[in-house]
Amino acid sequence: MVTGIIIAAAIVGGVGLFIGIFLGFSGKAFAVEVDEREEAILGVLPGNNCGGCGYAGCSGLAAAIVAGEAEVGACPVGGAPVAAKIGAIMGQEAGEQKRMVAFVKCAGTCEKAQNEYEYYGIKDCAMVNMMQDGGPKGCDYGCLGFGNCVKACPFDAIHIMEGIAVVDKEKCKACGKCIAACPKKLIELLPYDQKTFVQCNSHDKGKSLMDVCLVGCIGCRMCVKNCEAGAITVTDFLAHIDPSKCTNCGVCADKCPRKIITPRKIPVS
Image (cartoon, rainbow, N blue to C red; front, side, top):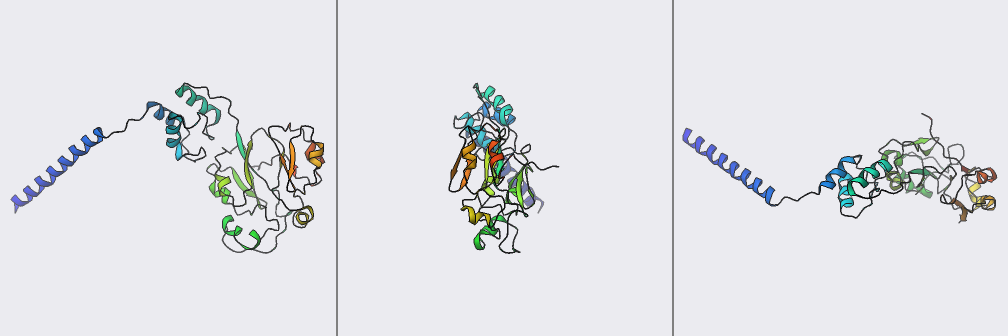
């Protein structure tokens, strides 16, 4: 009996020793060499793994930069400081890094936008968007206010205020998670220094829009006529400001009869 136990233990121990030696040899024989620059870049990246760069986490971006498939300034979270460090590792100039932030193109708060019916279902924008008329809101293009963008933001930079999503640009890292989460496609990235915005996304004609929202853009072109920089265009009844041309003079905001052209609203904490 004792002899059998000793033999069994010896066999198990021998098998374990063999497997250990085999794995150790295999690990060395089939090891994949990692470029030291890749590890160095991974060390300076913020480690949020948000995917805002378009790659599967920070390790994916580090590998892409070393392979020449991504720019040294591809991390939206790290911004210029991280780009400079990565540039030094790669022996490249990082170049000018323009900080971007998310902006929600809707000002249809609970007081300003009408509802067509009451919704009592799951509090999820994607679900609500599949309901009758794209949700209870009278404006088919407006923010639904159920916070899918809030849930998606890893930086606590977006909140629901008075029924619509509002971005805190000081916290926003431009990772793009909120853009992907919004079923209405209301959110876009704009330069951090931009001060003048059209806070609307509706393409409805004037009267149809005015019936459901007190502030939506009606495409009257008053902003276009008064913009000396030629930064504003109107397409399908909606004004759009080109940040590369806009001087942030504020004339368009003053002339807009609907007061939908406005400085970014930042939540007060």
